[in-house]
Length: 231
Image (tube, rainbow, N blue to C red):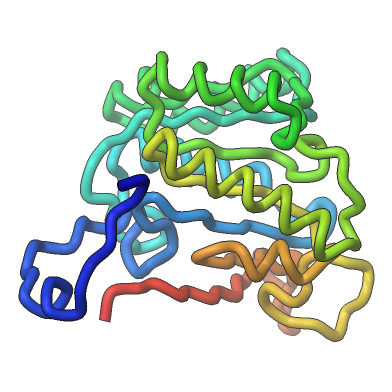
């Protein structure tokens, strides 16, 4: 048989302990896909790198538990070597555990097409051979060549990402941009086809920085849609 089939009785009687979330509260679930998005210059890459370093070192992230250290691969297409190096050096000052340095790895700027069989095979082999358990894709637009406004085309893109998750036993974070309109909230604010938001397990929208009316340090809010948080 090509895949498992469970009867309702089996599901009812099976009482194994549910695996802990990679980031508690359903922000990143085992074998799940989280979409992290926001406006340009909102700080998405910085936040995603922070998530990766925290996962690599099992450091709580914004008050959410990370139960186990995991090897993280940050596949990115925009940061040249020296800005990437300087940013990582600065961020590492906040991490005492050496696992942050060992378990968090970033690529040189590289574009891949998840729907191209050769590119898919390359990425699959890298993840498998290196033993990565969390992969961060930054940003989505550089990892496909489909029409971002087409539900049919973006469904095929997200389907390949889901294949990658299932075949390599990873959790995946995809960085994406918000659309230009300002009326939408949550995942609906992400740019392009609704098939993108519809295909993920968790959605985090990073809002642009704000300054308090009375002055003071800027702050940022997040909007989260968590479909598989443990009840």
